[in-house]
Amino acid sequence: MRSSLIDDGAAIIADAYDGYVLRFRDLTRRARPNFESRDWHAVQRDSAQRFDLYLEAVGGGLERLRPLLDDRVADRPTWPALRGAYARAVASRADVELAETFFNSFTRKIFHTIGADPAVEFVIPQLPWPSLPAAGEQTKVFPRTGILGTLVRNVLDAFRFRPGWEDLDGDVARVTRAMEEALGGRTVEALELLTPVFFRGKGAYVVGRAKTDRGDIPWVMALVNPDGKIVVDAVLMTEDEVSIVFSFARSYFLVELDRPRDMVAFLKQIMPRKPIAELYNAVGCNKHGKTELYRSILAHLDETDDRFDIAPGQRGMVMSVFTLSGFDVVFKVIKDRFDYPKTVTHQEVREKYGLVFRHDRAGRLADAQEFEHLEFDGLRFTERLLRELSTVAAETVRIRADRVVIAHLYTERRLMPLDVYLREVEPARAKEAVIEYGQVLRDLAATNIFPGDMLLKNFGVTRHGRLIFYDYDELCLLTDCNFRTLPKPTSGEEETAGEPWFYVGDRDIFPEEFRSFLGLRRELRDVFLAHHEELLHVDFWHRMQDVHTRGEVVDIYPYRSARHLRGHDQEREP
Ligand SMILES: Nc1ncnc2c1ncn2[C@@H]1O[C@H](COP(=O)(O)OP(=O)(O)O)[C@@H](O)[C@H]1O
Ligand SMILES: [Mg+2]
Image 1 (cartoon, rainbow, N blue to C red):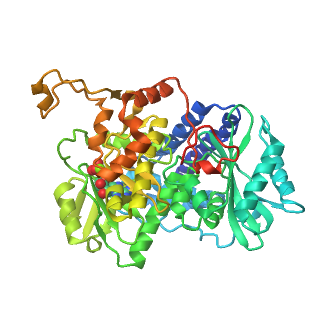
Image 2 (cartoon, rainbow, N blue to C red):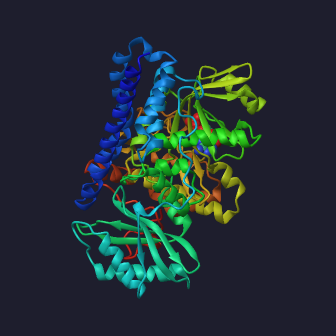
Image 3 (cartoon, rainbow, N blue to C red):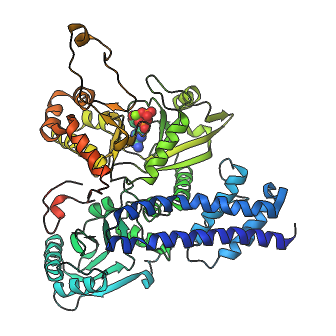
């Protein structure tokens, strides 16, 4: 084929990528003025819109590419050539790894590639991962020259917002005191902070590390805007706490990314336990996060003999779930047919996941990645898993000789199902989990989500002991539900009827029924009731519905209430 045609084709894809990056940056940049003017609805809208940009950009690029290449668009030899030309076009970009992922999306749309095709895709990244600490371009070092308070003041001076600080002197004093407590005798020599501010929901975060006489520790400052002026709400200085701020169960940050790799490399140093894939997701590059996840699955299969096996816990009625031992991810395939009494369709299940992707996840809904046409070596699957998949998901999973091809699946972070957890842990931990369970329902309600199927098996526990919901097929907006009190039976017959004797609509929910529905053993149910009795009454749910109908956006903090530097009227755990 003419090389100019190839160059033109590559230019179209590079151009589509460029357009994507500009729109992404544009939406991301609105986060600051939205935070400053407290326009929380705009924040939500922009986050959802930004999520959709990627597929729009790929679709738009394909529309221009098809007429140019004509029937050669699906010719295999076209693509290695296109890839070469594209690689040259994007080589000098600071976000070249994202640009490669973008190219791969084109090839997968055209070829529905089974597995990854090294002839047409960028399977191996062009650049090695930076081994040096991220260079100074995106961070700023604030050396300590005198007392700690002066250093804190310098930082607050550098990170200024248009409305100004509500109480600068007070914030300096509170931050200094909190840091001294957290330092436990260590001395801060400097703070090294990422210059871009991280925005999400109603919060803004300054992220970096404290260089101390005994090594580096994470340093994150949480800012809020309760009444029009900026307030420092918390300072977090442990890996666990910072890791929870960056959790896979929270929405992606809006943060300016000139050099995503360096940014992620820096974050990885602060949170060494967090997978690179999740860090890319956290800063909004979830498509590239998916590439990184895919590579880490391949690497894990390569480096170990671990096999895929049925996930521990109760089998799903809608999803068939499996794990890869030694790997922190579960794989979820939609079953061909759903067990009684599930009435959702495949399409609806996918729509529910789509809703979760775009909605505020509140620290309580597990993020997922959607894969198509994955291929694995059949020998890496246990017998019983192959049998399970060929029985319940034969339409999605094809098993051919020694290959397993999966047309569609979701991956999620692997958690310990709550029903399993409650059976295994000591009573004190189980009690904490049950209190936390009620808090999940409250946090979801605060973001206008009703989980639907709220049985214990649909919640998982993280290594931090946090509880997260993952079963989405009955999830819906709180404002779409109809919360009702159970009608009083008027006759003995009605009272003893096994089936409801009154009309139950599709969206009807009877909170009184949660009591028996939850399936908690006696002592745990008492703990639940002691803390969350109000969840069994319609008043609570109606009140929350009103909050959303009025358009209020409720505060949810990704840190413990004890961390609030100025105390709060309504203390809530994250
Ligand atoms: N993220 C996860 N981590 C660990 N186990 C999970 C995860 N997601 C699902 N499971 C397991 O798979 C089962 C079925 O998954 P679920 O999402 O609840 O689908 P279903 O709608 O079919 O119930 C769960 O009961 C649980 O045991
Ligand atoms: Mg379930």
